Length: 150
Image (cartoon, rainbow, N blue to C red; front, top):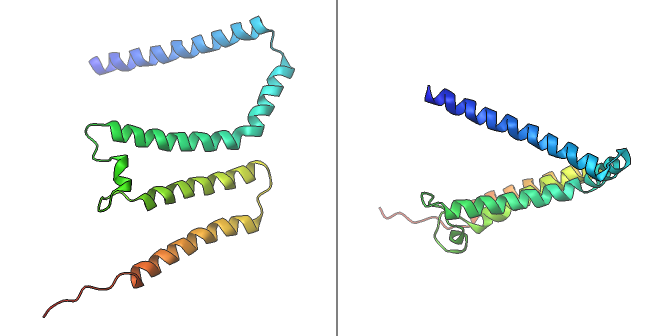
């Protein structure tokens, strides 16, 4: 029964919160006498800068996730391990992850602005295919095999 009360309380808090947000928005609209042209201008600004805001949000999210996992006492992850030799974390993995984020963002931004060409999409895809091929060749030919003594 205690779990039901907790869920009911959380649902009530959320519902009251949403009602208060809409009520405050209504008061602000009346106080500042916001009309259709003002809303249209704000939505135009949001529409123009959405891809940039998305990129900033993605990078901030990555930074926040790394910060939180570094601060967590139970986590074995430490951001400084990226810069130390012999640790499980690798700076290349972080760079590759950020490269993937920027590639996804650039495709999103070009789709958003209706400027995505087939050549660009193939270039982004080809970059990752070539990167994986170089990694595979590096793993195959880069390390000498250990000699076994028989």
